[in-house]
Image (tube, rainbow, N blue to C red; front, top):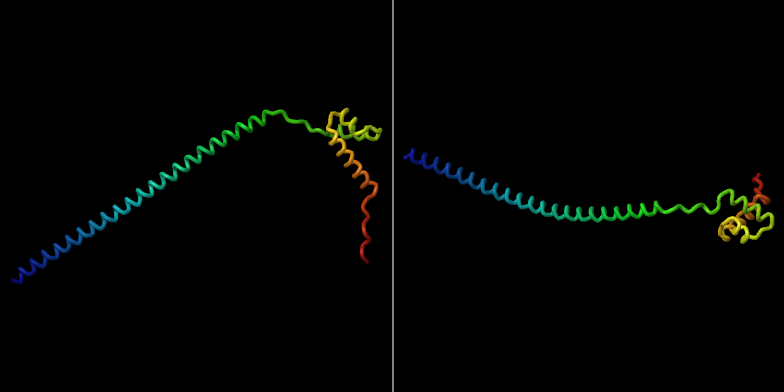
Length: 141
């Protein structure tokens, strides 16, 4: 009878071991399924984000093309010459000293009259400052 008990105990332990292995196997399968589901969900989210990013990249590429076209058009425009170079400035001042009016100076040099008036006003202000330099206050003793 003792041997029967030992045999039954061995069989019971074997069954318990197999049941435990089966339980671990099922738990592992569930964990793998949950991990696979989570990975699938992340793939879907990543795919959605990638689609958004691709759309944004396409939008930015179109905007860049438009800006490049605009830049090419702007670059092809002729540059406006500087209205008042040093030579015209000195000519305008000489004509003013001779008594010419700002309107006649502007017409003769091909400049806007307002620009000539501005030049003359700046010249008068700087000439006034050169004639009357600012006085320094005496240093405190």
